[in-house]
Structure formats: C-alpha cells, structure tokens
Image (cartoon, rainbow, N blue to C red; front, side):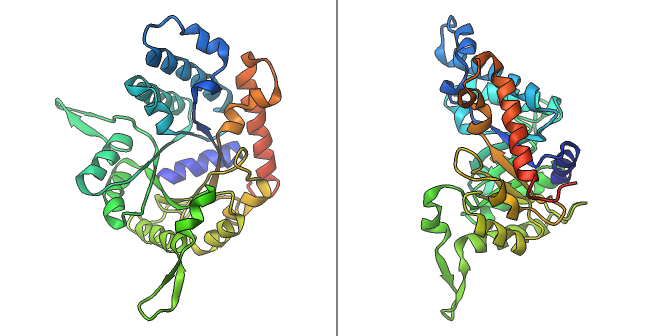
Length: 313
C-alpha cells in the first residue's frame, strides 16, 4: 500500500519528516528571481524561479528526508504556469525517490470528487492513452462532507496504490471553534468532540482498503503538532490511521510535543515543516546562494529533535 512505501522511506532515512514546498515568491532567493526577470509574463517568470528553487531544495533533501508536500494554493497563485511547476515539482521529487503528498485539501461529492481523485491520484484515458495528470502519492482532503466526499477517493487509492490524509484536528488557532465542539447522542449523552468523531470515521473508511504491512490503512489523518494532548489521545484511539502532523517549527510545534503521534516503533506519523526548512537560509543569515545547504541543515536538526523523543530504529 501507499503508506507502506512512505514508511519504508522513513525507515531507510531514519527520518519521520516531510518538507513542505510552499513557495511564496518572497521565499525564493533574489539571485534566482533575477535570472528570470527578463521574461515578459511575470507569472511565467515567477513559476520558473519557483521550479528552480524547488529543485534545489529537493536535490539537497532527497537522501535525508523521505517526502515533500507541495501546497497547491501557492502554485495556483501563479496561474497555469504555476500548476505546470506543481506537476514538474511532483515528477522531479519522485524521480529523486521522494514520496509526494499533494496538499490540496480538496472536498466535494460524486463526480466532482472523482475528478479531483483522477487529477491528483489517478489516471484518465485521453485519445486512447492512459495518463496521470499530477500523479502524486497522496492527497490531503477535507472530510466534512462525510462519506459522500471520501468514498470517491477509496477506489483510486486501491487501484493506483495511493493514500489520503483527512483533516481531523488541524494546527491553526481557531480549529477548536468547530473541531472541539462537543457532540451528543439521541439520548443527550456526550459522544465525543467533532475531531474525535472525524477520527473514528477515518478508521472506518480505512477498513474498506484493508491494513498494510505496517498495520496502517490508506486513509490517514491530519492532526496538528500545536495540540500535543489531542495528538497523543488520537494516536491511542486510531491505531490503524497514519498521521500527517503539520505545525512544527514556524507554527510552534517541537519534537517533544509531536512524540505522541508515533507508535511504539517510532512509526505511524510524518511531521511537516515548511517555512522553517525552505526559508532556513534567512533565519541563518547565510549567503542566499547556500539556501539548499541551509535547508539541509535545518532538516537534519529537525530530524534529531524528533528522533530524540521516539523509538525509530
């Protein structure tokens, strides 16, 4: 299964982290931006600069970090040129042996959700040829439309060996406005928080795909590093659900706080950091020509921080 491939890369690199490729144009070093300043269309110029930036980061990280997570919105911001860069980034990372999580947080029902599944995870037949539009290994999705919004993804996950991460308890400050709300059964007794129920639904949706070699299904959950108590609680309640854990680094999460996301073997989760890695050269104050080296150093620091609290062998 898809998450087996990810887990094997985590074991190979001894690193349960993913680098988020969220390339705001201001994050791209000036020397790269200047290379493309002569291109007439600013959207094309920016997209080419972002691609060079991404490839430099991937080259520096591919042997020590198992996965990358490009956030689709940052590429959509550059129009169709940006989505071309998104597709090229996915392809380049996979050629370098990295697992790719498309961070799209897509959500709809029926044929529309099937179209999202085809775009990011599946294949479509055009002019007698089967092609994969983006070909990512996994996709983040919003499950708050219920089973109607998740079921169209399950068949492509099986057929094409892909995975999904469903938003459960997110890392943003206002997540509790909805996700922490108490729910009550028909008799008026408490039945858990909204995020707990969503987690249970992930476990149930995953049963349709069956367990993998490491005991996790192809339906994962997004659980934020900024809420360590809920993170540890959900790990105990969702033994077959692999976690994507955002919120490390710039959002305030640290190694000790995310340790509750992992099982006894130091598996079961992958922790994301975006700005703290891709903008590490700014924090270091080093020459921007060494942006990739700075990203590598921060990725290694993050690995050491997290692995000092878990039992990953």
